[in-house]
Image (cartoon, rainbow, N blue to C red; front, side, top):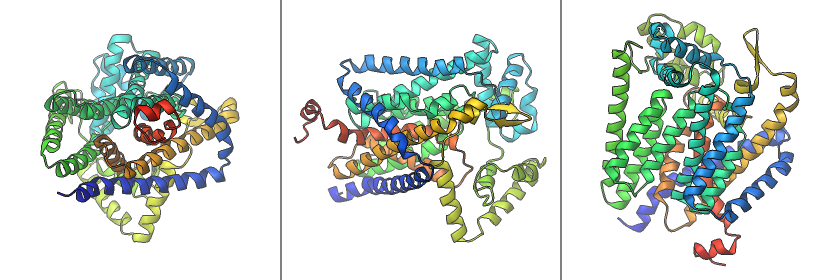
Length: 479
């Protein structure tokens, strides 16, 4: 296969992701201009400059830096968890209360309507029940364990970024992520995202860690992916990206190694997932194991033109609560068919609107910092005073990360060699973008994807670091 053809496979994916990233930045610029966000660049850019200088001048080994970034992330998140009096709400409250029951030996919750419909939600309950066995049923230990995994994710951003760029840029983006406001909005929340994201990032890192035997790392990647999926079921999206990457790289390299490795990973993933589900059944925690008995729900909501792909109470009341599962599936199929029959123009309008909401709207602080009154989440007086200022700072930070990601993708297209890690991360994030064009959306669902944005931002950071003479000398850049 010629070099041109080899380049075409990787570059096609990078070009598509570059175009979509530019489109998302366009949406963010419009939204930010309308909401007077750009003035907050005066606060964000000095912070970025300080991080830029620190990441280059900090003369410590990679191992020490890894340890430092982990400790800083754990301490900073831990302080937020300790000082915020966040009470679990919605699904998070369900997880918490059911974990207390399970810890006492009461497994009745797993036989109820909600958990037999969404049996996979038993995973977070078991996760919290295991923590309760060690530290009791208080909220703080649960939050601090989540902070531990958030710190792990931050450290893995550093390790993965080193695989696609270099140590300087990896330090830069991991320190950037350390101060990125959005994760702090979810720090005191008992969401299943923290543990799962860390497992997903660890799985990705193992795929790129060539110092480990390919079979061992493939099995380990599959196992850790299944751990994350058991708590938050988006493993199939990551596997989709892995499969695209493996096939493309195998064609380019004229070897089946990547395909074999991904096949081993997938086999380990499904074997462990089956094992977890079987254990849950045998323990009589949930007769359905960890399966999803209602996968159509995400599409019912995702194609709802009226709710713009966000959660719909009318869908919940009229469709979700149908007691007969077979009848509910038939109704759901009919509704989905009707909703995708509205014509190409409306479908494209819906998808475009979903991209705006999912990827360009302000983040939210309601899950962690609002008060519950009369079954509604409301902002306190102090929150009303500062909330939108904080969200505007986050938005400016968010835009900067996407700009670096776009720069990194453009730089990748200019370079003769495209790192296989860049292709892997690009494939996974592209699958994530594609999935949320079809299924239900919430702004908090971008939590894991933004970690990958920061990883790809390491490539764009090479342009910033090239301003240092020693950096240019070390990486043989032209002066």
